[in-house]
Amino acid sequence: MTEVAPALPHEGALSRGLRRVLPVLSVLLAIILIWYVAAVAMNARWERDQAARAGVEIALPDLIGKTLTQDRPVLPAPHQVAAGLWDGLAGQKVTSRRSLVWHGWVTLSATLAGFGIGTAAGILLAVGIVHNRAMDQSVMPWAVASQTVPILAIAPMVIVVFASAGITGLLPKAIIAAWLSFFPVLVGMVKGLRTPERMQLDQMRSWNASDGQQFWRLRLPSSMPYLFASLKVAIAAALVGTIVGELPAGATAGLGARLLSGSYYGQTVQIWAALFAAAILAAGLVMLIGVIERLTLNRMGLER
Image 1 (cartoon, rainbow, N blue to C red):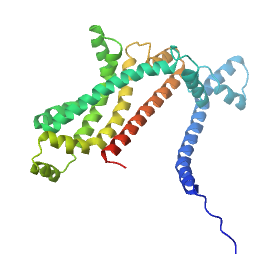
Image 2 (image 1 turned 180 degrees about the vertical axis):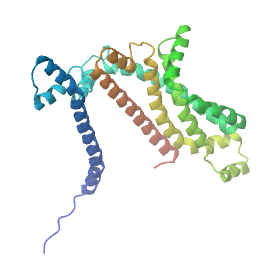
Image 3 (image 1 turned 90 degrees about the horizontal axis):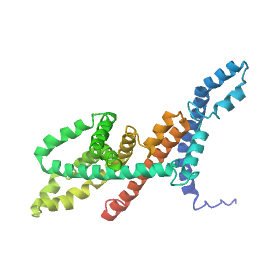
Image 4 (image 1 turned 90 degrees about the vertical axis):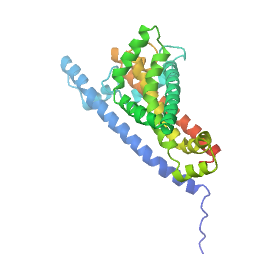
């Protein structure tokens, strides 16, 4: 009789891991391939024009090679963006004005300040809306209306008003970040605080629980999953608000200033490197909130 080889103990976990990773890698490779094709197509015109002015014909292999190594391409190739990102993160001193780490810290500080202000405002307004019918009917419509005004229209006004009062730097950008971040927190907290059913609230009243006890022991724990979901949206919105706030201010520091200077001088690689640095920063902040969420919910017994 033939013996059947025993299955490896980690074979199931390995296959499950591959099934999760392969679709992501496939999509990533497809995006990179499309990106390279688009870079060649969009940068080819410049090379053809240069060849026509020199009165020579350019072969397809040479054309492809030149389009992927231009100093100021219309669309940088992925390897050019990766090189620019690496140079900005690891190729410069952290204190250098050319370092993406230094610019990222300037943007991060304003983002966290605005996120803190927006989160506090959203939570306080949500508590008032849930417990006060007048606030529900008056504040909530204005909160919704505030998000219909484009942030690109608000940012210059905020910068100008604060600058006229002699306030520049972190605070104006933090206010713009708070403007975008408070609304997700407000909506999430209102939904979460209203999650307890009437039967649960009646049971708390039958135990002679005060409004404060109902809030701390029922409403607030029930709102935690909604709060953390909204915080992930809010932190990303705060980062966007900070970068937008850096654009009209003529700032010399921050990822927004890096984008602005790159657009002034046609440094598209610098622009794309700053964009990817902002995306990495946003992903890191969202992941950090996710870690805090798991720790908090596990400690409260709401998630295993």
